[in-house]
Length: 248
Image (cartoon, rainbow, N blue to C red; front, side):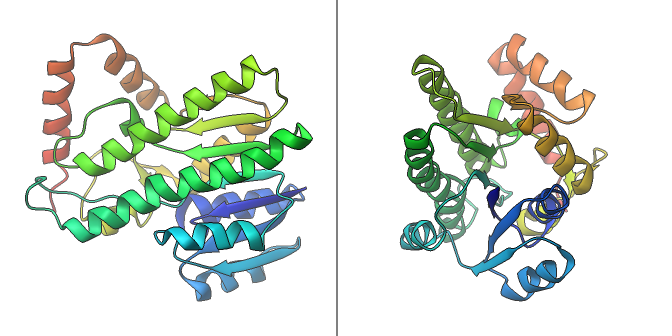
């Protein structure tokens, strides 16, 4: 079995690679930082292919697909955030965020899913966030990108079920995780964060059991529940209050 993991140089992606290698998967690990990928490769015991690539560049997504065929599991994990008032955040960084969090995930999901459907097997794990179920004042672009991932993955899952396909798709929606995300997004989470090792193992185990929405942690499960039942105005105010606390 062969899995491709994007955003594999650190955090959840790195720990997913470690765990899946321990399970016996050969891996294609993808990120921009080649040194970190090569260091990770030395830790792992299965066959590992390193591809250093910036997936915010659309053409690279097609190149990745051409370089890495015959994938049984696709993990779309690459992504990052940005904090600040929408009119004050850096536009170029936001465009790069959209290209990474949305465009790259969309392209890779479509290309690999078409192959999986032809052979009627395979699994895709799209990494979203609990943010994907809510608005995100002060992190508007990031939250919007994860809303896209949630909506796209839910729609694909319904199509697969209607077609009675054996291809499976899952959606990982964690809350705060102790990774480099905070530094890149320029935020400081006040809430207690889960470890990336825990989230990675939790996600892969449940993906392999064909669970669809995967939410690590009781408090985050409750957050999703209240986001569904409370009025939108209340959710927007609560989100703003939570984000405001993240200011460094």
